[in-house]
Length: 332
Image (cartoon, rainbow, N blue to C red):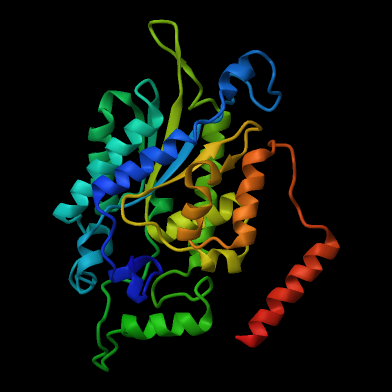
C-alpha cells in the first residue's frame, strides 16, 4: 500500500484474513451475475454487439499480493522495484484470490490475463492461474503499460549531500503539497504519466474486445462459455485504469484508495452492456475504496444504462461543478 499512493497509518492495519475475504467475495458474486448479452446478441437483440464484438462478462482488476516492499520499505533502497518478490503470505493471498475468482466466474468460464511484467505481479498471476486451472486460461499477455508508477531508481532514505538524490520521504511530502496526480518523482513518473500509458493499454483492451478475442466459445458439448478478463497490476495503475475507464476527474481519482493486496476489483457488465463496479461491490464496498456520494451514484447509473446512453454534464452543470471545485481548492 505504501508504494502506490497510500502513506497514512491505515497502510499498517492488519489485512482481512484470506478466509474471511474469500467468503465476502463469494457473497458479492452471488448478486453480481452479469446479464447473458452474448445470447441476446446472437438473437439480434443487442445492436451494439455482434458475434465478433463480444464484451466479456467481467473485467477483473487485481492488485498484486503482499510483496516484500509492503512489509519492509527499505527493500526499495536495495532491490530494483521490478524485482521485488512476494512474501510467503503474499503467495497465499494470490492463491486465495485465484480460488475466489474460480468461484466467481464459474467452472465453465474461461479467463484471459493481462499482467504487469514486475516480479510481484508475475508471481501473483502465476498463483491465480494455478488456482483457476491453467487449462481454463486462454492466454496471458505481459503488458508493460500497466506496471507500477516509476518512483526513480533505487530509493534514497537520507540524502548524503553528494548528488545521491532526494530522500523518498521528502518527495512524498512535496507530493502532498503539490498534488498527488501531477507531482512527478525525481527520475520517475507522476500519476498523470501513468494515466497516459494506461490510456494506451485501455485502447488495446477495447481493440481486443472488438476483434473478438473474448467472444463466446462453443464447447464440445454444444454449450457456450464466457471469457472473463483479469488484469494483474499495481495500486496506482489500478486506480488510474478506473479513472480512465469511468472518465473520473482528478479530485475523484485522489479520493480513491488502494484495495487490499490480491483483492479483486470487479467491473460487471450490465443489461445495457455498460460495466459498473456497483453490482459486485455495492455501496459499502465502494465506500471502502474511497468513493463519495456522487461516485457511488455514477456507478449505479453505469449499471442501469446502455452503451449508447451518455451521462454528460450540461454546460450549466459543468460550470457549477468547476466553481465548486475551484472554491474547494482555494480553501485548501
